[in-house]
Image (cartoon, rainbow, N blue to C red; front, side):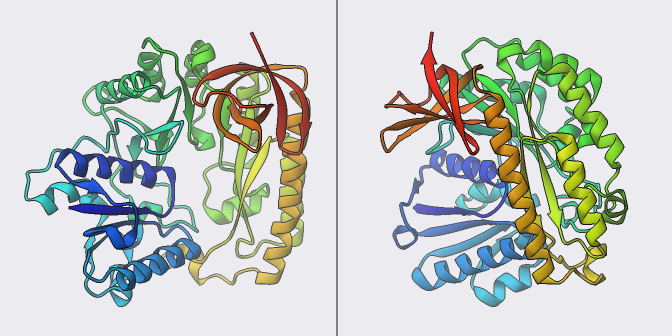
Length: 414
């Protein structure tokens, strides 16, 4: 059987799809190059925003129309929370909620499930590999559906995680990104080992590879965790993605976020205490219901105060069955204007961070060659361009010679 896979959404979804593909391959099936070549179509959906819904439903409709003979299987967060909507677009689709996702290859092949928490042995088409350590969230933020779509909080065993990383390193992956719905809640069943303890075990491994966190909630940053991460030296990337969402305490409270700006700023201070000039990035939501111009101004000012390296900007998206759904949203025109102002600030931050690296030497992973340049990723998440081609998937010490926007010019040195 030939199978076509489509993923909408987050890194966790991408890891899960990769794992499903590997499981189907182990059962004797092949991956199809396109929709029309497939006997089975598997769509892994997201529902964190209205756009994610639209993207998933649009692809479902396209797939059903393009290859009506293929069996259509839909899984993921949209399939978990809104199966009726999917069936409006594809009445013949088979739906599997998140709790049954990992069993799909076995259920469709008539085999007993062999769950392994979505382990992967490779990551097709990528220089960097991603692994899933944790699933589930119970924060209950006013805008978010994730605690309903992924409400079973669980973690991969430490032994399985260490083995998976060792295998990926042996396969040649030089950077491995550790992912989770709420990565900081990692806790190994049976042993009680937390994220700090797991990292201590991983750092004992041999091999030429480095580790990066996908993201951490700010309240999950602790002195103890940072002390362990610092011992990783060149093995751990000096990069942290800490969702902020707003720089206004009133808005944070309305969102149900479990911190204020003072607590967030203190976490940044801790990070800078343990890592010299780390890459610090944040998510920000624009146009949350009730956000005033003054509160948005507080967000802009606080972000500047934080000295972040860059932003990931999202417009508020009304999601059914969340506390914010019934609230009056900021007008689309105003939300769009505020998003543009934040994008302008993001460009400033990225340019300033890149320029601050001039003269430094950064350990950089080469990713690809394009238009006569080699492109790489530094440990602090800066993009580095080298004049001329370099072998992909290797570490290079890059002396930063210049910066343009969010990209640095690098010279490979010994």
